[in-house]
Image (cartoon, rainbow, N blue to C red; front, side, top):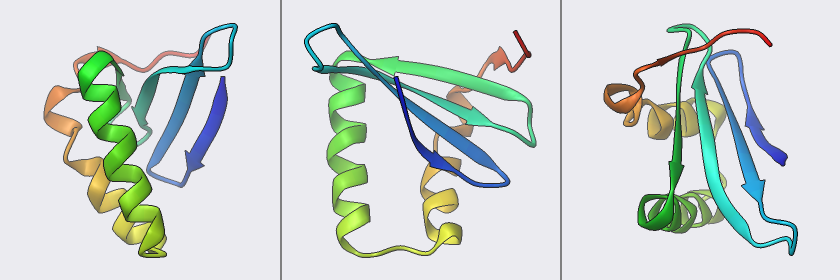
Amino acid sequence: MDMIYNSQSYCVVEFKDPEGVAGGFEIMDKLGRREIYIGGDLAAHFRTDVQALIRSEPSEEEVDDFLRRFEGLMQQPLVMH
């Protein structure tokens, strides 16, 4: 598990299997206090889109705008463990 992004609004954690192959992502909306885990094809598309975004050297605001696209899918409440 690697935290790949952390701002005042969002946190993104990448999960990997024991062989180090990426398996999915947890996207957390800190302000909305909800999250989503994405895996499979959606995670692969997310990874591709994030790599393209990173190449453009985005600002924090641009990354947050990108992550905001997933808010409609976030149904799981964010709770502390």
